[in-house]
Image (tube, rainbow, N blue to C red; front, side, top):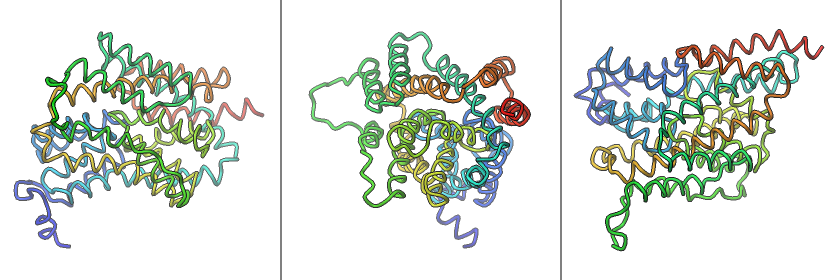
Amino acid sequence: MTEASLQKLGNNPEAASYTLWQLILYFLKLGTVGFGGPVALVGYMYRDLVEKRGWISESDYKDGLALAQLSPGPLAAQLGIYLGYVHYGILGATLAGIAFVLPSFVMVVAVSWAYIAFGGLTWMQAVFYAVGASVIGIIAFSAYKLTTKTIGKQWLLWGIYLVSAIYTAVMETEEIALILAAGILVWLVKAPPKQWFNKTKLNSMAIMPLAWASTKIPIADAGTLWHIFTFFTKAGAFVFGSGLAIVPFLYSGVVVENEWLNAQEFVDAVAVAMITPGPVVITTGFIGYLVAGFPGATIAAVATFLPAYLLTIIPAPFFKKYGKRPGIAAFIEGVTVAAIGAITGAVIVLGQRAIIDIPTALFAVITLGLLWKFKKISEPVIVLGAAVIGLIVYPLLHA
């Protein structure tokens, strides 16, 4: 297909100062070298596409960022999909999303293969011995930043946060009904409907998260791959903002309910996502690989990003008109706070599995200290450093 024919399929290619192929190559590069998590990736897109190259206008970038924050889905991936949509419509959104996710998916599959092939070897055990504990420190610090940035001094939000955190820590699972209830509570308190008893239907955008949330995971009569697809589609619909928000949901489904992985393997899966570039939620590819090989990895990754893709391209044309309504913003605020509380609770649950002795406790504490002291330090650098130290320390402790 020629460039001209591709542009005809676009949303507004005549206004673009770049070709679709240039955009694809940019997201391939970002997906290959883009370390630092969702906040960093969002910053890279603004620096490169708005400030340096001028491909995307300031207003289009802000609209995309707002939509990504309001909708469930991994923040950076959704923003990339939206920016692909700006000038090249659904085709641009699709190819930009694939290009962004593909490099990290390939890396995760390679690491998954090595994990299964050599997981019994001392060097692999040594790497994850240190990296697992370091990841706990990273998640703890991320939970702290999300908490202080999001909640502020609002007593209602603090109450929701504490209830969600305590429930997750005690029950070792994330309760979706609790998170949805938090969104509804904040909506009713901050932006209650003006007419309680009218027959007007709710705006379709406002109930979209509820429609995804009400979906039940069906029994896998059609086999494990179908079960993987349905579970990870549901999981992808509950990632608000930070990719780490998916961790407690995945833990409860993967370890507790389905027993696909044990707790240590799950911590290792999160660690793999930390040491590879691109979106953090690509950890689902690692999990899928451990459950059902390459087909499982592919289906898990596709299913995780499917809700993010659909919830970007479907509301995109209408977002400027409806996206800033107080009721929608209040609902998302409540859901986000509850999700942050679940992340905090997950730190306790996962920490009990990863921190098993004094050295692993030191890895977690030192990681916290480095992130606290050096604000611009890259998290993958810390994880890779922990892996190197683990290769040295683990053989000495388990000689």
